[in-house]
Image (cartoon, rainbow, N blue to C red):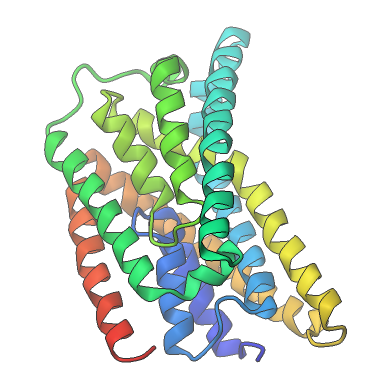
Length: 290
């Protein structure tokens, strides 16, 4: 069943806000879909999710572009060092994420996307993410000292730390409920990277991995559509999807302002507490038969 215009509006706002906050957008989108009686694994929802992800990626680029120019592109040496760290982190993500997805699919006997409707698994992932965010937030509540200049941010993530952050990012592939930004920013903070630098580096990694994720979603959509020709009307989804993408962009910008403010004020641990509350809510929905 194709989502209605109202449902697309709701999903666009939920995706845009939750994608860029450390609370797992996928968990929130799945719960919203369940409440609205939509199938998270359906081709229609896969296509819509790809469009919503494009909106949040645009929000990331718009929000961080000026700081990335200072941090990563201030000089040729800065660019070289920053790109090397992003590349190493992304390679670590692939080295962890791809085998993990294959292992989960082999053990479960299903495509990883088919597991996204498993609410107890989503709740467990939310709780795990909440524990890491809470630990990082409580440990790093005082202001960073000394403050790292924006111009030095590209070099302030050591190579080993960048690889660790990338490896942790690889864990999110098969598990909806693990917040990408929550895990990567928290890992950087626990390894001694200043909060603002952890944030910039985390979302730089997101811009690299989001396009392949969108392509994966679109590939899965076209495979499903090829198996059932005519089952999905792309034209009927495209125009409402553009509205959802616009809403996810706007909600994403607001969410990033909120995230940056709480991170700088030492309120990061509150996101961890929220993840525990959300995990309990997801468990309650599972018990109610959603």
